[in-house]
Length: 158
Image (cartoon, rainbow, N blue to C red; front, side, top):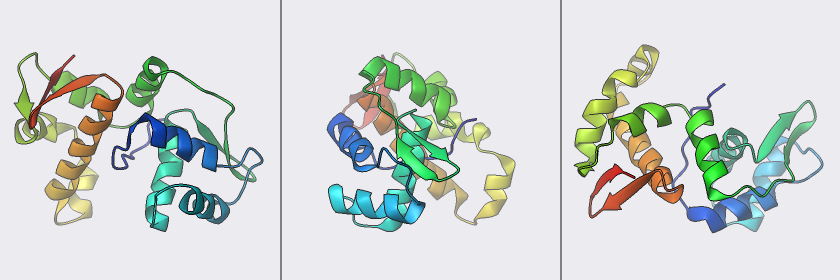
């Protein structure tokens, strides 16, 4: 199952800090969000909730019947890149849209647009703005995981 989540890209160090903030013994969503807010630079509960989901998508945390917990894993960038591709909705399509020549975010969004689920288009009146932000965040994470390269304000395949 792919999760539809993409927090603001924060780099490998923050990713590790966020994983370490989650408990080893499952805790409630509320407790886990509080831990993320206390132990990282996050300031909003919604952002903490999004990070929990992102950590799950990357295989760094899991949801149990008792709540969320971090997994005792320390994967490298390559393994995280694979988990990102396989666990986060839209990543494969966005990476397929990249070329060897740099493209700006508008060009990449135009190539990605057809992959936005129809129900998402009807979910909110500003769906394009929402998904443009999502594409921007996915591109940022693709750069963090060495799946794309940033060239000025553009991106290209690696």
